[in-house]
Length: 267
Image (cartoon, rainbow, N blue to C red; front, side):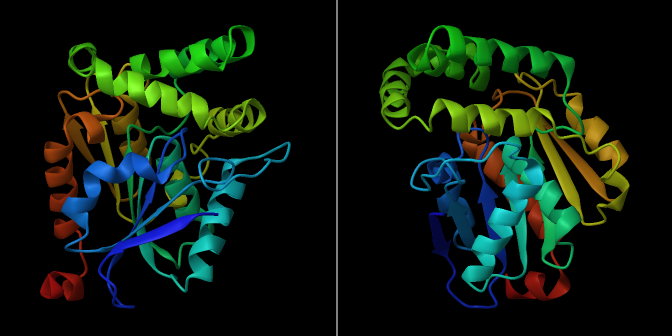
């Protein structure tokens, strides 16, 4: 899989792994790099079957496989200890990593994620799946921004969205890959396992998220032994893009507050 390392270069530098949502590609995190790289070694990657990590995903693909693939990819680069920041699907990968590789994961940030799939989110995913299967890739791609961004932000960024639509169609991950990734996401349920996740976990949500109700984040926090919650009033499902400055400040603040003493001294 394709992986990129940004920012600090020392082998013992505090490491943040950024894991994207259903789109899967590293470029989602471009609005965060300038804020994070002065303080951290930042790892971005294209998830298996997306972007520059072209592959055919197997039947039965699941969240544990996604976490294992990332853990192995990092180990190949001799990255054995890290915090993980994940958006939606990427956040659930982070929770799975915390369960399956507890000696490697220090902290987890889950952006607009959930403990178990909400019925509203399930309906949204079903609509998107129906568009893909019954209308086609272009319709699926055109509908995607409606679930990601606030309406007024979309209205002000039509040229950007049109260009992104064309890019996403040209670099579409493939129908079978997308459906297998989507089914893995929809089938994930951390209710039986949340009590075993002892790492500090931040759930950060946007109150105007159309895809994932903001109430999913406090539900996740309540199920965790060491959970924290931050709510943003605006920004939609992709508020790390639409309100990047505020998001970055909140993320850096929590990371500083929860850093180990040695990390605080270094910063």
